[in-house]
Length: 109
Image (cartoon, rainbow, N blue to C red; front, top):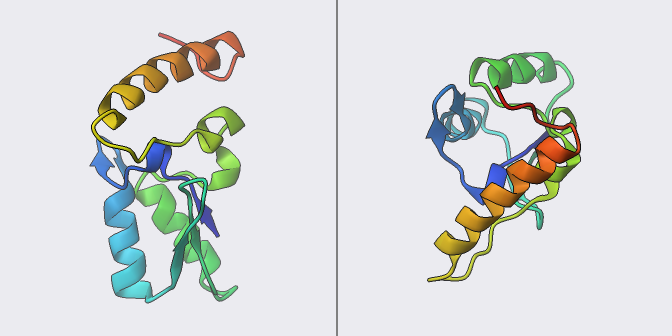
């Protein structure tokens, strides 16, 4: 089961509670998780009977499955290098939004 971690940042922000979701998966469900090279997380060995409950838990935390995220956002990754990382994230976040709007993946209000 895949979970996108936007820009490689596991955090709670607004209605999206990624950190709280992973804490619950590890603490209550005791499932193994693997970080992928694209900075997503794969939850391994999910019993078929538990999958609907886990999907509901994702929705309750505002977390989208990998399949629900547009490819541009899903495949974008953060630079791990310091001290330029903050600058890179700022620059990429701005450009990523512009590209998403241009390709009809995001609508501005």
